[in-house]
Amino acid sequence: MNAPGISVLILTKNEQQDLPGALQSVAWSDDVHVFDSYSTDATVEIARAASATVHSRTFDDYATHRNAALALPFRYPWLFILDADERPTPELSAEMQRVVAEAPNTAGFRLRRRDFLFGTWLEHAQISPYYIRLVRAGRAKYTRAINEVLEVDGPVAELLHPLDHFPFSKGMAHWIAKHNTYSSMEAELIAREQGLQNPSLRSALSHPDFHTRRPHQKALFYRLPARPLIKWCYMMFFRGAVLDGAAGVTYATLQAFYEYLIVLKTKELRRGGA
Image 1 (tube, rainbow, N blue to C red):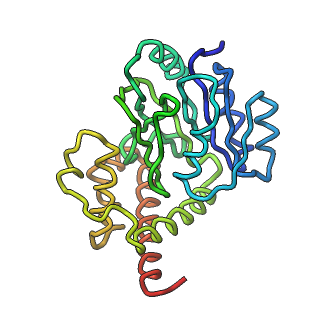
Image 2: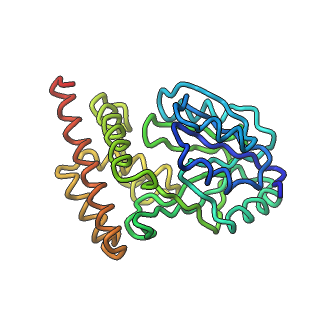
């Protein structure tokens, strides 16, 4: 069944394992675009076999790359943005098709993403579960080169049903390698003082928009001593990652290690290292 009014954008780089499932999950759209970073596996062939439109671009940074994808010529006025390791639930797919016909003044929709590890939903451990993924074409743009934020020009409403995310689908080694790269990019932003320079505690704690709170929270967090330990304790006991069992404890520990890599690499850069 086609979904008039919704195009789909999937960004890829060597996603032959996860892409088939992603494409199947959005088979209700007849305007699916795969924005590929010159994959060396069968990603492009899989996309074309599923009748998706393939575009290729060399990756530079996350915000610039995603903004280039948003500028593609989509068939419909609404755009659903998906990663290859994400799956909209059938209920979410039906909800999106319904709301685009009922929201004449809305520019975007925010939804809850459910991250999974060891087959367990990280209900408590997941720090940032809310994302804007359904937007009017031409009314959204990304900011920040790493851990990019999607900004929407206009009112944003809420979707009730979740988007499922499987960040460990390619294995633990892949997740660690990816976050090793992320930590290098984060450290470079911090060392060069390219992040938010005058964060506000009020905005970090009480601003009504999550995407405004988050940059202030991160900028304040980067100024704290013992950040990896603080993050682990925050995730384990304040967020309640321990309630997610072994998956939650593992995820909190991985996130604390990721924070430690950022600390080490920032110090290295400030000392004139690699």
